[in-house]
Length: 180
Image (cartoon, rainbow, N blue to C red; front, side, top):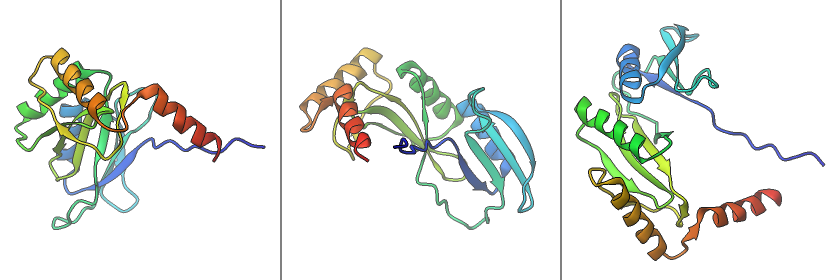
């Protein structure tokens, strides 16, 4: 019997109003780099951005979004290694002048959400070693010391019905995937 196919989402494309402004934002705030750019099939420009040498692109920006069109992006999420990196990017967003920032723990992640220049919601997050049933969101304060943020998150998670250490939750999902 062949193994089940398990696709992994590797990149997302966004139609934009102003490709140049969006490239500036994603490179300055998230540290992505342009891996390629050129004419889009639909006319205008397409730009490929990445944060890792193993991925040609993780975000694709394509001109052609109507000036009056609202966003259809629910969110684009960017995972980082640790809380120091979350805080560094948070400070970049604050320094950029974005005031609409939501800081939250989902139990399984410490995150903050903010809009890009065209109103698409972005999330920067790190994983935690815990699981709580989703959806779940509790405000956090990224101005606190790392140890306090982690301790508060863990305390909250352990008090939440359905809490599991992450490895136990992963075992349950692994069992489900094996039965698919």
